[in-house]
Image (cartoon, rainbow, N blue to C red; front, top):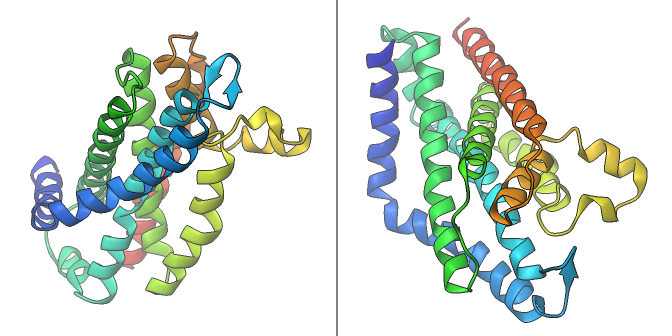
Length: 245
């Protein structure tokens, strides 16, 4: 199983290596625009709970990027399925479902970590301390694991590339903007507030922000991310099994 997972992971890393400069530049553009337009231009004028908006924004961008970059592995999986037909070769190869899912999830997490380092570097350039305790990295890893697993599961379910784009528009994008990344969830109406606390990204943003700001971290949020990630990983295994049938 380990050798199969390494083979899948190595393939994704070779693709990432060939696209590294383009990929890194693409990961840097959006956070840089957010930091300049929202953080730098308005950061000194807006405060939340005694901190500047720039200090509030950087952890939110970290949480959002760990989600979007981990989930982006779904696009490559779909291309491999629908255009290159590589997934058909996986089906005929002696690679278990566990090995395939593990390799793809690790690849998604690696993409997320790369995006995080880019944002932390940008945050440092804007005067925000990018170093946090272990809860900071635990929140990033668990959130990346969750959405990379979800990406594999949904990539096996969709019937074409257009369906994947719809998932991004109707699932990932709303979570990216409403889960406490750009403004506190508590500012929204009460009923939306309670719904958003069911969204994993809300917990990831709170853990990452609290740890970066040196405030108490709710470890139940980390447990929630772990349990949700485990469920998504199991869904990914089930989806690959159905795709084989």
